Length: 231
Image (cartoon, rainbow, N blue to C red; front, side, top):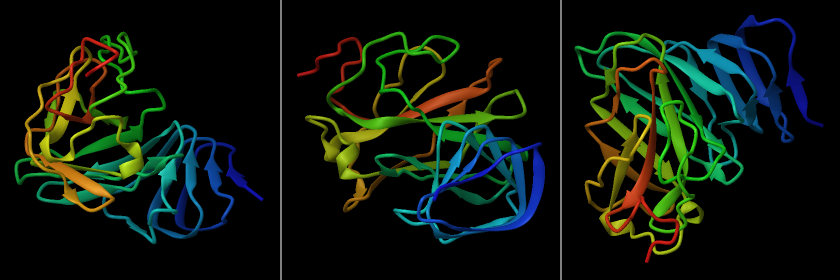
């Protein structure tokens, strides 16, 4: 049966996940040294912090972090970190690479539970219509702990063919971002891979703001954000 880890927020040195029915962390916890996936997923209800120096092993298309909470990792300069997250549709990891001048920060990440909206307000609540074509669902939310804005030397997002909406063009797509308003324009290019697929950008930024957050998604160059029906 499914298991849960609850109680007061605590620290766990080493953990092995071995439950095909999944394990839920219902409160804020820190995993300090290593985490190994053998069977099942981890569902995060609040926040789960794993230092950048800790190891995460055993992740796959059926073993990853999910839920409405955040996976948090401390990023160091000149490093690459994969956030092995996903949702009920599958494994949707994001990889962040930092430059030598990057100031160490704890980055929060999750998959949004709502549809890819045409626009958002300053609190990142959807204010537009759900986009039904020319995009990949869902949307990735990335936040920083230290305010001031953060730029990454590379961001790579991975998705599955089943995440693509109607008319999505894999050969003319790109990563788009939203800092609490309108989506950025698409820098068109071909996706890599063969189900799963990937797309990367060297201009991923969390803008300066009180919420220290940005949304990232995948769209093709025919997307029209102002309309629910795109043809």
